[in-house]
Amino acid sequence: MKKLAPATLIGFFAFTVVLFNLFVVPFSKAETTLRYANFPPAPTFPCVQMERWAKEVEKRTNGEVKVETFPGGTLLGASNMYEGVASGIADIGLSCPAYMPGRFPLMAGIDQPVGFKSCEVSSHVFWKLVKEFEPKSISNFKLITVFTSAPSYIATIKPVRNLEDLHGLQLRAAGNMVATLDALGAAPIGMPMSELPEALQKGVVKGYAASLEVLMDFKFAEIVKYVADYSLGTVSFAVLMNKAKWDSLSPSVQKVINDLSEEQAVWTGQYMDNHVEKAVKWAKAEEGLQILDLSGEEKSRWAKRLQPVIDKYVDDTEEKGLPGKRFLDRLYELKAKYEK
Ligand code: DTR
Image (cartoon, rainbow, N blue to C red; front, top):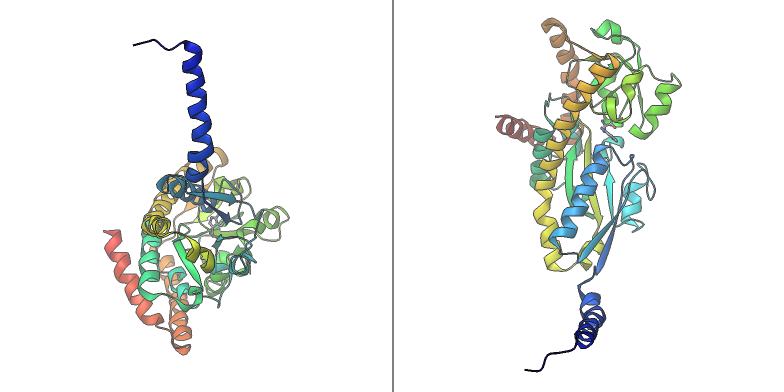
């Protein structure tokens, strides 16, 4: 057989590349771009989980879907997230129901001071509850996943060892936790996480209630030096997608996204638990943070003050005709199951 000249071979190769680019690449390229809005800064856990989800979706759809992420409120902020996704400014958004007390009355059950110790457990329980109860407040959206923050603790500039130390103390809290801190006798101010750095710096608040990874992620341990070792509630998050956008996706893409939902909730919880551990180690070693044990007697005093908050959740939901009591019963059941 006649040997082909190298120039002919190169020509043939170039021709094949051109053909490939003309006909194959356009059809295999991302067909859909999803714009995902998030409100806190990129290195914080709600954004870390967003990047992981984006990567998994791109990988599992073989590039059919591209996810463009917008951390740090660059597309939508905490307060206009819900409306922004509904109107299609973003296709997907991380909403924080806990920042809007009253708006998601049934889902608020997850954030009651029920003593979660692990974010993996609380996030998994929340996912199961949302699937079982299908809250009306988010029925206009496609639910992508849910998770919670790790449990919140009170972190302060001056030590808090008992209710007396806490009395009248100005503390920042996520909206849903205002009632909890009120019940403990503090003077809570509801505000999103994104406003806390300035409030702490200016001395508007003397501490806050939040999960412990923010000690490191926002460097709050440079200012607050004490954490009272009593697990308060979590702060819940829901990742919502615009319904029309969801309906426009192919069944195979929808399947990838659905298959990822529960896994993403658990992944986020695990990531968060590990991250909290790292943050506390860092804050102790670098900033002299102290975790203050409460005596057994003090813990029962706190529990006694917090029970009416949980009871009020049940009363408020039942008054609205919502199954708050069943939601909580099931929450305790799932919590016990996953804590094993
Ligand atoms: N603890 C909640 C939620 C939360 C925890 N870590 C972060 C980081 C970035 C934004 C929100 C949160 C809160 O107090 O807001």
